[in-house]
Length: 385
Image (cartoon, rainbow, N blue to C red; front, side, top):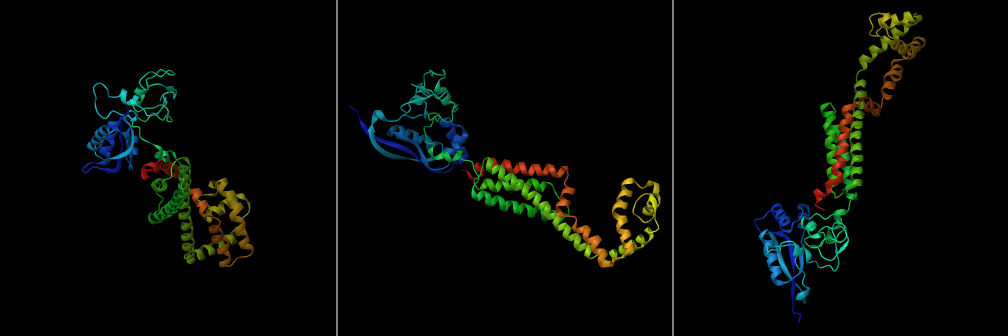
């Protein structure tokens, strides 16, 4: 005649016994249950039921083992059940006369067992699999199941239904917002430091990329989409910061030119004199001599003037001077057609392109790759999700 008795669940409160550190407990739990350390950390991150439907004596033994390694647990009485239906422990909690691993692994509560190597159905976890020939209990005892889908690969028998969020990779709305804010702050940081030291420091690009990846990861975002977003935001922040710096530089240059009235009046007078003298010049040889005499070439004599210098003078400078000779402009007209026109023709984008070199490319790559790398996998570590 079957005997009925109360079964018990072992419930972890989520807290540790006084005097224990989490890292110490995680390692002890992993050793006790023969688990990878990462699995142990995932199990102990929050309150949960560790074991179900145990007899009173078995439940007490396991509770004492768990308290010895530092876990705060309690026994929770469950339904009345036949003693013959009680679930046996799936992991050896103590050494019992030549019965350490195999019997505990063979005692499964599932009506059908699957081989952790090939997922074929087996009659017993301690006998060779008829499909692939391996011993299932040997694989399980090493906590190295070959199929992540096997429902019998977890030697603790603990429910992982509440851990499905671990497989979720994605970019959250919070991550998008924080990434955009970090990119804006990074661009302003680049501009501020470059203006303060009058030099663009490449290491700042690396730091900006790491910062963007960190804040996106902190939001819980991770995976490929988060990595791509972080990389794009790093590119925008770094290039945007450089653009802001050159825009400020161009503005300061305009203000500097506006305060150089005396120098520009002198340059205006010199060009009028040059234009008058150019009227008597004819032929390539005389043009070369004129360029040397009036400072339009650094050559020591006319023969040393290069063809490139001569072509540029004849195509750009000479027509302008000839127009001055025909109808001398006022100072205001001259300033607008020369100084202001040349200044407005140069944009911050042009300055950025001209200054961008190999070193800039290296640090741009480092910033983007760091942002992508941190954003891809950092969320899991930073948020504990």
